[in-house]
Length: 128
Image (cartoon, rainbow, N blue to C red; front, side):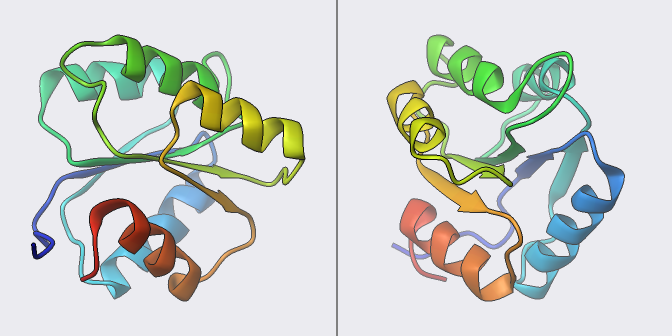
């Protein structure tokens, strides 16, 4: 199964610089169909309005955190199988466990580079 490089990806972060960094890394890897949301509720609205193939979300956001967004996605019949990667500056074991229990597909700890992102993406969507 080959990965569709035209797949729609939603990146969610309340920090504009981080959105730009993730977008640039995805572009380096060949993904150009990238949309952005600056919080969980905006992301949820976008996910319900358009078909996405992957969500990459920051954990620490206000008012809806990445983990709350993940729980909402997993609770939604239409979205529950959507691949979801969580990004966080926290590598605390309890956070990793909470994300796993909520149904995250993979977890990236900041800072990270294109190689790390590619490895995590490949584990979730397949090699590309």
